[in-house]
Length: 639
Image (cartoon, rainbow, N blue to C red):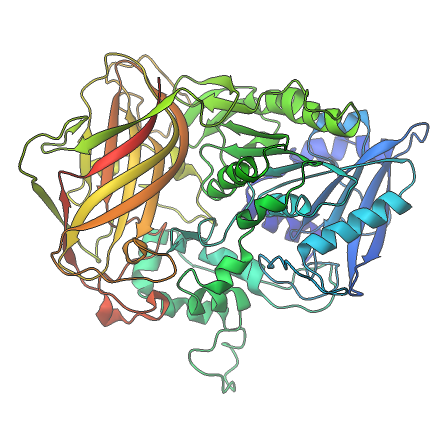
């Protein structure tokens, strides 16, 4: 398989292309080739392993330049003399004004030596020749500033998604030359980002497993992994027919087609899938790999700008918690956040029209970020004074309801207050409980007919569009409970986190709980969006603003799961990630509560088993769930 095609496949997974342009534009754009030289080197780490590194240096050697570096598991291709990227750096402005731009294949990936470890754990007390990603980054920067000609001694790091994680890593116990880091859509913890959400497995990501878990131990410039083939255009039915998660093991047994194989029926060759299967709880394995726990080790000498999208399906937890972790532990740090109306990595695109799925948020939003925020950040700390007077706000955030940017001195803003709304009878959502007696609202959670996360009939590599999908299809199902306010007579702005305080019961011993926050648009809206799917209208559009799942067994501890006691009223608290959204006058605020969300997440057997990844068909049972009307939702409301 040719390298170009491999890189294309990888870009499907990470949903971004910092070097995005049409094929026609790529052929015409020779700026990099005309203005940069490319050099490939193998930099030796302290333990002797060599990491493949590509360096793009300006041909104009009359001045010195800072180094902008991205470390990635997704390949620093194209490899070979004379083969160059068409776009380099975080954005076109930083590329055209001149910077030394470096890409590195992380340990065990592509052309770098060593064996890859997914979310490799940070070692707090390394011995002299021991390594981790922190030391690999340090050693790389040390080599670059000492060996790359015409560098000014200042280094910045950036990256989106997994490369964003490595940008976070670069700031921990940072090299003195590192002056600025911009983790963007950065993975923070694999039990809460990407493949898990609060312990629930994102079944819709299963085809991406092999990208990270296929073993290799030698450098290569061609693909060594392959993606499972579904042979279906209906992912809902495909996963429903497959049944229990353990039936997916066959896709990760590399010798399964060998008729002479004596491998065990349950053998798993993919080391990432095996890790997921063997560690269903938030144990030491996952805890050790989380990076947000180490934000106290980011020195004040490194300026950070955390970037994320309010509608990022993969990595919203990571950037929010990274920003908050640095704020909590680094009182002297320069630390800012930028959150816009984007899905995964869309701020790096060069498109004018900014939409997520069916929903339109405005024009030139990403272009403005690149020119007025990102470029200004790196230039100030790598070429300018480098003090805290950067001219940028502490929090630059987009109100996804009013569709406008706001600047604040802190996040959440100082003028927010907590307000609780109760889930009342007759679909009511109000600040007051609707009576002295608590009522029960029951629904049947049928494991043969789970609630879909999207009404689209399709297969996707990893989901994205659903984050702004119209939720009317779900609101009209009997196994989705709906609660909403009266029509608002004034604007109502949420700014910060959301806590769902559910009071529930089930006839079974296990259940998942899903809470969605929805902006119900007026039926007589004048708002229009030419990009809507044909079957939709903006009239009464149910915009999903935020959603989250909690695997009920983890309601008290992610490390020590517990079954439910049948028919016993139980507290289930679900933290939803931050939002910044104004529900405008004439709209309604709606809450949906459900127990399945398929196949975004896997089916819960609704019978407690020690390990869902090893559950049998007989463990899956339809149950009746109850939500009590003293349940509430706590919002952070802008005063």
